[in-house]
Amino acid sequence: MFRLVVLALALSLSVTTDGTGSTPPPETGTEAPPATTVQKQAVPVPVQRAPGVGEPCGARNGPGSARCAPGLECVKSKKDKKGAGSRTGVCACKNDYEVCGSDGVSYGTACELKAASALAEAEGKTGIKVQHKGKCQKAPTIVTPPGEVWNVTGSQVFLSCEAKGIPTPVVTWNKISSDKKKMLLLPGDQDNLAIQTRGGPEKHEVTGWVLIFPLTTRDAGSYECHASNAKGEDSAVGTIHVVDSISDIPTKKVVQDDEL
Ligand SMILES: *[C@@H]1O[C@H](CO)[C@@H](O)[C@H](O)[C@H]1NC(C)=O
Image 1 (cartoon, rainbow, N blue to C red):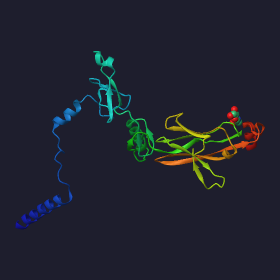
Image 2: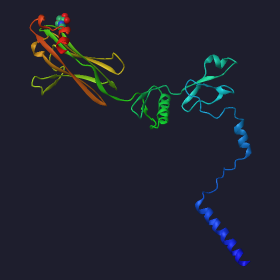
Image 3: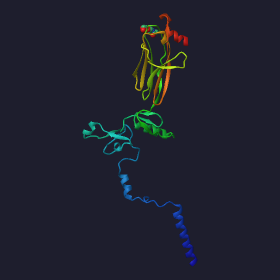
Image 4: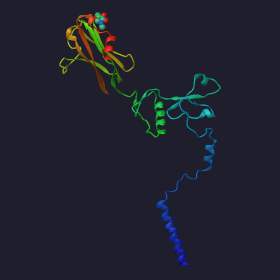
């Protein structure tokens, strides 16, 4: 009889030590009061995904009464606000500025980025975060290189160069000397040469020109168009040929035929 009591005591003791040792502490909220469950069921919105961009919101009750997804706001047209009828709106992005994603891609809004991130995550890829406001920075690229021009002395010639990048690159010109080692930053001190730069034709694009008048034999040679911004640089070379007579100027067709 005494042995049995001791055994029972030992058993209960081992149970208590085992209980505190390996099982987690009892959760306080495991047994929720039935009232909470009832309240949850009373909410008219079915448990589902919050409405995204362009989806209805703002209704008193029913399917259009759900709150817009995070980062979105419910936009109601003025007509609907005044009218006594339906007060539903459409979910729209709170911030309509461009953002640069951690994937190096520019997005129209943070909401577009979020949608792309969700898609990426659904495909098992890593999500995309906002890196900074505005478009992603991009090193310059020369869109249209300067090419070549031919003309006689005394004529007016120009080379043009179109570059793009974010921020918009700065275009400079260098005359490459005949020994191909020295670069002279233009315009230098020549009074028959001018440099011009203008933004465009498109956003983040810039076009630069070297204008020469009157053309002299000294102006013949290679001209480097150089585009640079905080992200990097690019360059392309154009050539000015000074010919003896107009008849020596190759037409575009001839040049193309020679190249083919
Ligand atoms: C050569 O220069 C003349 C006069 O400046 C100009 O009218 C003509 O278009 C030029 N020719 C070429 C092929 O650039």
